[in-house]
Amino acid sequence: MENKKFRIGIIGCGGIANGKHMPALKNLSEECEMVAFCDIIEERAVKAKEDYGTPDAKVYVDYKELLKDKSIDVIHVCTPNKSHAPISIAALEAGKDVMCEKPMAKTAAEAKEMLEAAKRTGRTLTIGYQTRQAPEMQLVKKMADEGKFGHIYYGKALALRRRAVPTWGVFLNEEEQGGGPLIDIGTHALDLTLWTMNNYDVASVTGNVHYELRGRENAANAWGPWDPEKYTVEDSAFGFIKMKNGATIILESSWAINLVDTREAKYILAGSEAGVDFTDGVRINGEEYSRLYTKTIEMKTGSVAFYDGAKAEPPAFAEARQWLKALRDGTKPCVLPEQALVVSQILEAIYESYKTGKTIYFD
Image 1 (cartoon, helix red, strand yellow):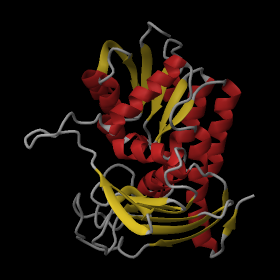
Image 2 (spheres, one colour; image 1 turned 30 degrees about the vertical axis):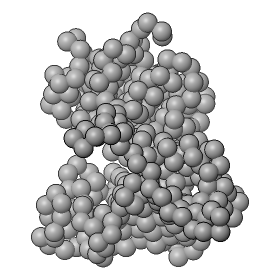
Image 3 (cartoon, helix red, strand yellow; image 1 turned 45 degrees about the vertical axis):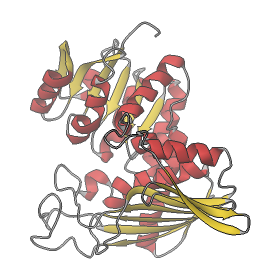
Image 4 (spheres, helix red, strand yellow; image 1 turned 120 degrees about the vertical axis):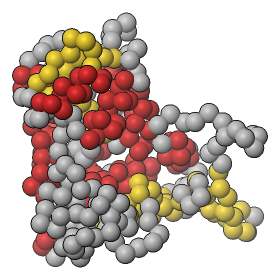
C-alpha cells in the first residue's frame, strides 16, 4: 500500500459523516480518495459525492451493493447505532478495513460480534473516539504512561450539557440509538478515562438513569425545543464503576440538567503521585517538599502578544491521519476494538443496573 491511495467507501452520509469523517478524509487527499457513498436517502449520498467524491464515485442506497466493489479498501460506518454492527461485520467479511463511528454498537453483544468478526477475517477495525487525539488528551496520556500520576485509583468521567439536546436525526429514538446522552457523549468521556488510566478490567457497575426534563414543551435548548413525543431516551445518566484493581470511576452524563458547571469529554484523575483535571487548561496537582502545588500547563505555543502559535490539527483530522497511517504501516490504530467493547459493556451495565435496581457484576 506504500504508493497507493486508499479507496474509501462512506456508509451513512448524514451529520457525523459531513461534520467529521468526510472533511477529515478530504484533508488527506494525497493518501486517500472517497469513491463510494451510501445512504438510505439517495439525495444525501449524491450530495456527498458532489462535495467529497472522485468524479467517478458511485452512489448506493444499499450498503450490501457497495461492499461488492472489490476495489474499495476501507469503509467508514457513519450510521445510527443500531446498524453499526451488521454493516461493520459485513464490511469486514467483504475484506474491508473498518472505521466505525462511536459507540461501537447499540449493544455489548453486537460489539463483541464485531470484535470476533475482525479477528476472524484478519481485517482492522477501529472505533471513532476522536477525542483521544486532542493535544491535551495526548499530553496527559503520555504523562500517565510515564508514571507521572503514579497508581491512578480514581477517575471521574464528565459529559455534562446543561441544555444541549440534539433534535435532528434519530438521536432521541431509543430503538435506533440504544440510549441518550450516556451512549452519545458519556461514551467519549468514559473512553478517555479508561484509556488514560490504561485500565479495562471491570469488577462491577451500578447505575441510575433520569427522565426528568424530556417531557417539557418549548424547553430552552441549544438547538431549539425538542419534541416531547419523540424524546424516548434519558436526559441524564450516572454510573459508579469499580475496577478489579480497586480503582473507582464515576461517570456523569446529561443532555439536559440543571447544572451550571458543565463539561463535555473531560475527566478528573487522582493518582498516588499526582492528579489532573482540565480546569483552565491541563491542571496538575500534587505534593513536593512537604507542600501542595497546583500548576497549569500552557498548551499554546505563541510567545508574542498577537500570535498564539500554530494551531493544533483538529482531533477529527488527527484521527483520520493516524488511522490511515496504521493501515499503511500495518500497525495498530489508536482505538482498539477490545477497548471500545469494554466501554460498551459498561454503558450497557449502567442501563441494566437502572432497570433492575441491582449492581451488575463482571466475570
